[in-house]
Amino acid sequence: MNATAAYRFTIVVPLFNERDNLPQLEERLAAYLEKSMEKPACVLFVDDGSTDGGSPLLEEICSRHPDFFFIHFPQNQGLSAALKVGFDHCYSPYAGYIDADLQTDPDDFDLLLPFAADHELVTGIRIGRKDSFGKRLISKWANGLRRRIVRDTAVDTGCPLKVLQTAWARQLPPLSGMHRFLPALATGMGGRCKQVPVRHYPRTAGHSKFNLSNRFWGPIRDAFGYRWYLRRHLRYTVDRSKLG
Image 1: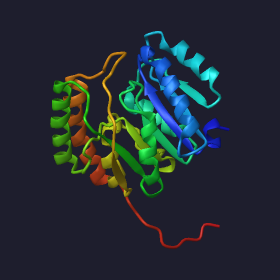
Image 2: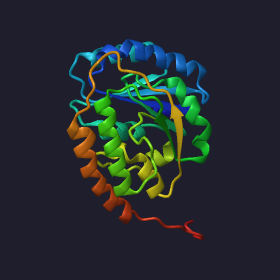
Image 3: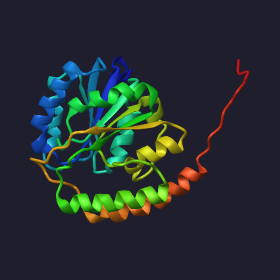
């Protein structure tokens, strides 16, 4: 049996080359599990083929905590793949998502969880973003163009702090770039999305994976693909049946 089935809330943490952040990440996540609004809670790391020597350290960390689990990719597959695999291996009623860069705080899950029973997706809005001006400007342009193309209402679709109903999260399509369109997918698949302000912090260790390709040109290209997908997504209602 999948160990996460014994928990109410599983925090999925995708990571790639975040060795320098792992000690503090361990400390913060362990502290949050003790006080989470949704208990019992656990952590599922998805190591996306790290090459910085952090994989053995991650496995050591998980061996110290009975509520820490991990999945390891032999090579880098990308954030969407890491998230999809994490959600697919989550059997608790609720799944959280947080990045390993420590720019969001696990404690802020408790700002999202009160809305999780009534919304398939609850996503953060980063208040007072501590990223560079260039990064914020490119994100603003990409967000604006994405909203026009896919016609969603997400203010900050890239916020790496989310809570999802696991039954819905496991139905997400295995598509490249999926992580950028979770709010659009929630509403496009007939679900409900709630946006909640959360805190944001500067990166103090490790290196950002941000570049024009993965934060501007790639997302805009993918937006047209998701618009096509959402227009063709089947939705139906069954009012009566006899199956037994």
